[in-house]
Length: 112
Ligand code: AMP
Ligand code: ZN
Image (spheres, rainbow, N blue to C red):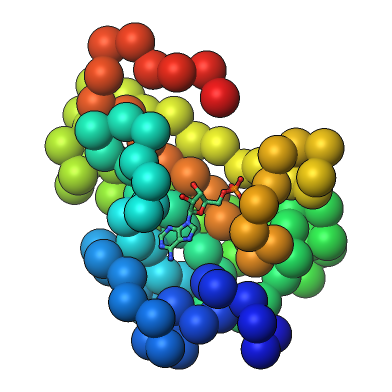
């Protein structure tokens, strides 16, 4: 997708603070964190949202969640973390490239 901001991050056309990368996934810090630790995991392929995923994406989605737990620990969230997948306008999604938010580090997290 030419004008997708996360596709541009994948192609390194705009900068990001990456914490993980492999052939399928990329994880980087959210530019507007809502907690002391806040990063997101995206697939390198463009998928608009969880609402457009099919069985074809099943393994990829599982890999994203397992990576969320692994990276959360590495980022110091040993006590736990929150994941969030905003889906569609009704779900408050702003960037239409599938992503899993992972955040934590406060005793009381905002319930967004
Ligand atoms: P949402 O689609 O509602 O899950 O929100 C998109 C998220 O992407 C927001 O938390 C933004 O702060 C974040 N975001 C937007 N642009 C960038 C960027 N260039 N680098 C890192 N995070 C971004
Ligand atoms: Zn994209």
